[in-house]
Image 1 (cartoon, rainbow, N blue to C red):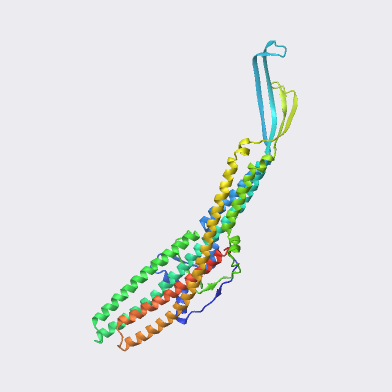
Image 2: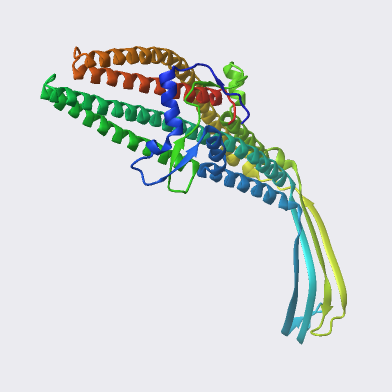
Length: 441
C-alpha cells in the first residue's frame, strides 16, 4: 500500500518524554514477562498481515481452486484416447443369411487406439465463461478479505500501542508514588504528619502497583491478539516501537459519492461478479440450447484371427445433432433456479451496500469524535500537570494532604490515558475511513 502518513499535531514535552519511554524502554514494558521482546512497527504489521494471515491464505487457496475449475471447464475441447486390445471368440450355432444353421468356432483379435470427441458446444462454452468469471469473483473476495484482516491487525496494533502507553504512564506514576510515600514517611518520623497519612499513602501506592500489574496483563493480551492475526509462531511479546501514536492522516483521494464508493468496494464488485457468473450459466438453458452437439470418433488398429492379424483397419464417424430437452424449454426448472440464484445474490449485494454505507458513516463519526477528543485531552494533560506540580509544592510546605497529591496524580494519569486513546481511536478511524471509501490496503 502506497500512502503518505503525515503528523497533524504535536504533543507537549512531558507527553513526548512519556512516548520516548514507551518506545525506547521495552525492558520496562516487558518486565515480569518471561518472553523475549520483539519490536514491531506499522510497516511490519501491514506486510505480515497481508502475507501471513491464515484467513487470507484460505481465500488464496479458493482462488487457486477457481482457476483450476476454469481449466477443467476448458478440457471439453480435448478428445478421449483409448489405447488397448480386444480378444473375441464365438463358439456354437449361428444362422447365415440363407437361414441355415452352422456350427462355428471363430475368434478375432484387435489392438490399436481409438479416439472420441463429444462436444456439447453451448453448455461447454457458457460453463467455461462462468468459470472464468468466478476467478474474478474470488480475486475480489480475496482483496476484500485482505482489507478486513489487515484492518483487524491495524486495530490490534494501535490497541497494543495504547495499552503500552497506559502501562508506561502507570510506571511513571508508581515511581512518583514511591517518592511521595518516602517523603511522608520522613515527615511522620519528624512528627510533622500523622501516621494515618503514611498508611493512606501506602494503601494508594499498593493500588497503583496493582494497576501496573493489570496494565502489564493488558499489554500481553493485546500482544497475543496481534501475534494471532499476524500468524507469528514465536512465543514473544510484541513491543510497539513506531511513532504512530502521533495522529496520522492518509493520502486519500477517493471519491465522496456513495455511488462511486460502491463501485470501488471489492465486496460489492464481488457480488456483481457472482451475478454475472450466474447470468452466464443461465444461458445454458436458453441460447445454449441452439448450439448443436458434435461427435467425432476414430478407430485404428490391427484386426484378424488370434495371433495372425490380417491388416490394419481404420474406421471413423462424424455426427452433429441438436439436443432439445422439452422439459427445459417448456417448464424451465433449471432456468428458474438460476433466476433465484441471481435474485439471492442481488439481495446479498443490497445488504452489502447497506453495510458499506454504515461503515462509512461510523468511520467518519469516529474520526470526527476522536479529533475533538484529542484537543480536549491535550488541554486536560496540561491542566493536570500544572495541578500536580502545585500539589507537590504545597505538600513540601505541609499545606496539602497526601490525598490531594494522589488525586492530582490520578487525574494526570487519566488525562494521559485519555489522550493516548483519543490518538489511537483517531488513527484507527483514519484506516477504517480509508478502506470504507473503497481503497485497498
